[in-house]
Image 1 (cartoon, one colour):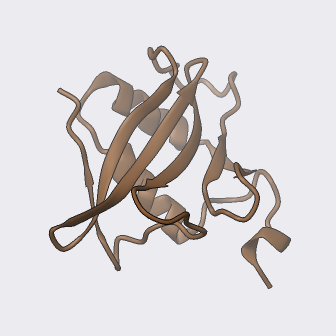
Image 2 (tube, rainbow, N blue to C red):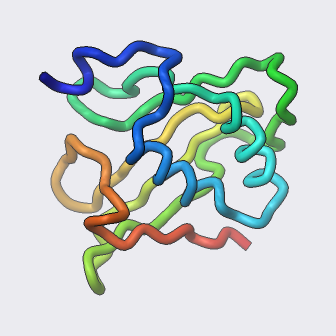
Length: 128
C-alpha cells in the first residue's frame, strides 16, 4: 500500500521528511531561524502533486511562531547530487510568511519519490 493511501493531514512528518526539513531549515539567516520555529509545531499537510512524494506543510498562523519575511517562493534550496553529478534541487517554499511545501525538481526524468540523504548528497545552497 502506498503512503498516499493511509496518511492523514495533520500527522507527523515521516523520517525522510524530517531529514529533508533538517537540511532545508539549517541556514544561519533569520528566515531559516523562523522556519525552524514554525517547524516545531508544523505537521504534514498532504501531497502537493498526485503520484509524487513532494509534500505540503501545515502551520497554524496563530501558533505563536514568527512569520518568515519572504516575498514567497523558495526560502531555501539544496542541491541533490550523486557523486559529482547534480541530479536536481530540493526546495522549501514559503507562502504568506508560513512554511508551505517541500518540492524536488530533478534535472532529468520526472520523479515519484523524494531523494534520501542515505542515498544522495543533499547540501543546502548558501543564499548569501
